[in-house]
Image 1: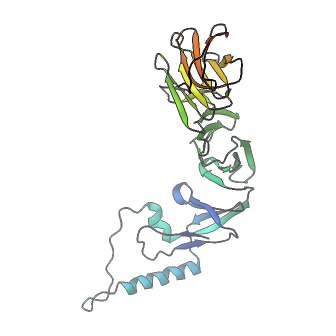
Image 2: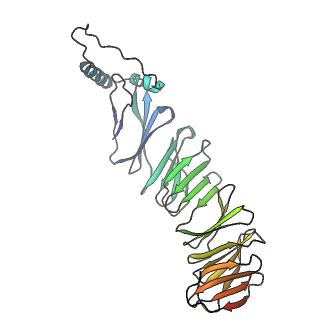
Image 3: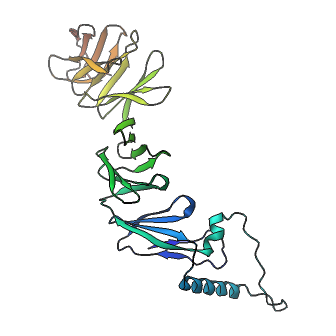
Length: 332
């Protein structure tokens, strides 16, 4: 059941109980103006209750009973004339609260929609739409009048933990807590307006571009993300590495390229103009790279773990220039 209570003292107000569901309620909320109340059960049953300016005989009896209980609690002193003092009208009451005793809620509609698992639900009554975000990363839009599905799309592989619709009803913003994802989806054109995601594991390396326009981050998830310092948004993600990244650096004389090293045994160079991995450097024998350095021109070096060697490559040609040996422990 759903119960409606008043936060303010309303003379004669009786808490209202909305029943009719056979399963636990997972969501209940007002429409704009409080003229309707929606309740959603775990099995997908939606009940729509509408406020009407009329009172049934049973409702009038409940109000009378509540009023007499109020009077009994507020008995005046023996020397009074037996009348109950009138309470000043609460200035914080809304128009709806002042008028709620002049009507009642009646069941207007009952419908069942298909929802599975954990979900988030939002209703925009002015736009006649109901949006549902599910635990499998799928969201669906239903017509509020007919409850027929309008649009459905799997936007993520993880649970949608938050959901909101803009005032025009064209854009739907969704958040997925597990991977730190944020999506803004225009469902009519079926296109992304915004798509953001943080690192899944720890961020181990951060590098500023020479002009301070970009920040590159790399983490144990093997991903490199480049962020715009003005908008604070990530505009490109590189996921070529298959293991944790151990080094990250911008190439200063270019400013539009970054190099990275990883435990997957590769050193990679990325182009921030065409957004591609344009060089991949490897050692003659498979090793794990533990650190990275560059002369900010044409040379990139990476230290390896067992054997503890330093490898030098030319960024321009991609050739291995030299291998420096002599260390007896991990290079950092």
